[in-house]
Length: 88
Image 1: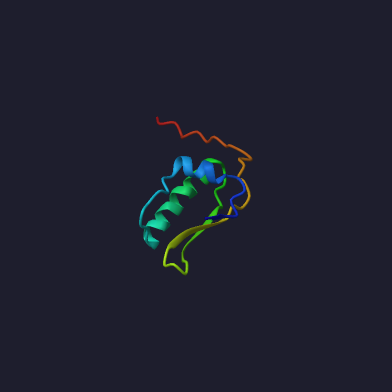
Image 2: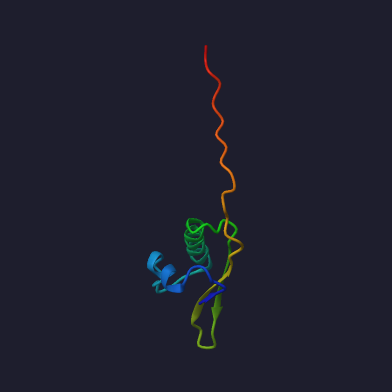
């Protein structure tokens, strides 16, 4: 379950991250969240925050939820090159 992902679609995420896992715990969920965060970094969203949660329904089945606060896209304003001092 994905909430708040406006700049990466669920299908884009699913193409890069394997989410077909028969059983998952909170630690694995955090690892998957970090993998998704890397995808956002590649798209220029360095300030993305991904919150993960396992929700158990009334049948006892767990649903993995990823909530996104994408933040603003990062932009490079200036690149400054500094030369190393010459050796004598």
